[in-house]
Length: 154
Image (cartoon, rainbow, N blue to C red; front, side, top):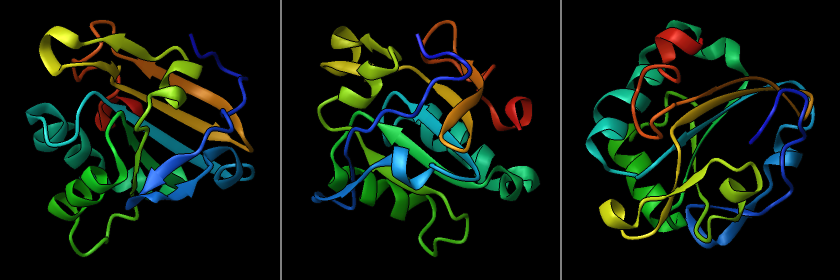
């Protein structure tokens, strides 16, 4: 499981499309950052409370660069970003971990085959500083919204 002090994995993620790759280890190499992991784009908990909670929180601007990561493809994440933040005022970037390698590298994935058809990311919030994990909140039941909520984490 990911721990405070760990480096951000250098694993390409998809932004907007499968061909547009982004490496969070480079994006967050310096300064503050926040990575929010979710089990599924467009799911009720993710779309109605978890991510909107971060978007509405006044402390979000203090978090540095902010990314949402889900085991979905870049097209899905682009559509989800548009549905939640069409004018992009939140500054949050939505990234697809299409093959689940990023989530697996931090051991924040779980078998959700019965519910969602494949392995998915646990719900989490991870703060970073200069490319290293500085704070972690991973939901104990994988999908709840308690420990990783904006009001508790920020």
